[in-house]
Image (cartoon, rainbow, N blue to C red):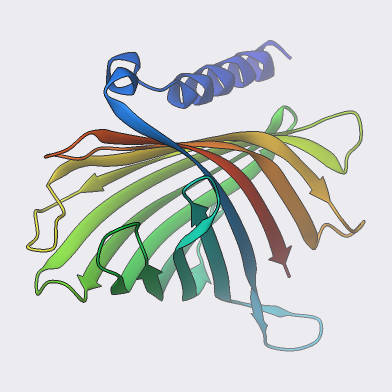
Length: 238
C-alpha cells in the first residue's frame, strides 16, 4: 500500500509540475481562445476471429478553431501502422497531412512523416502512458526538412464511477533544426491538458474526453503565444 501511494504521489507531482506554465513567459505572450476537436481510432489487424494480430492501425482527424474559435486555423489527418512489443510497448510509423490557415498570413500545406514508441500500463492507483515521437516535416512555403521531437506523458485516474475518470497530460515539442520556412531549433511549444473522460460503452471501446488545454508556443522573433483551448476528443479502440 505504501509503495502504491508513493508511486501515485510521484505521478501526480510530475504531471502537475508539467501543467504549470512558466510565469516569466506568460507576461510576454499574446493570448487567444481556441476550440479543438479530434477523433482518433486505433486497433489491431485480425489474424483470425479469436486471435488479434500484433500489427496495429491508427487513424486520426482534427480541426482547430482559432481567433476566439471563429476561424478554422488548422486541420489534419494522421495515419499509421504499429507493432506490439513486449512489456506494454509498441512501435509506430505513419504519415500526416496538415493544412494551416493562420490569420493574415499565407496558408501552408504540410506533409509529415512520424515515428513513435508508445508505452502504457494500468496500476491500482491509475493508468500511465507515454509516447516519444519523431517527426520529419515538409512545408509548402520552404524546401528544408524540419525535424521535431515530441514527448508525451498522460495519467488517468478513475473517479466514483468506473466509467468516469480524471485525465491529465503534458506534451513538450522540441525543434531539432532551423528551417527556411520558419522553424527555429530548440524549445517550440508545450501543451498541458486537464479534464474528464467518459467511457461511452461498457466494453470501453469508446471514450470521450473534454477539458482545458493550455498551449504555450515560443516564437524567436515575436511575442510568444498562449492559447486557452476547449478540447474535445473521441477515442475508439479495438
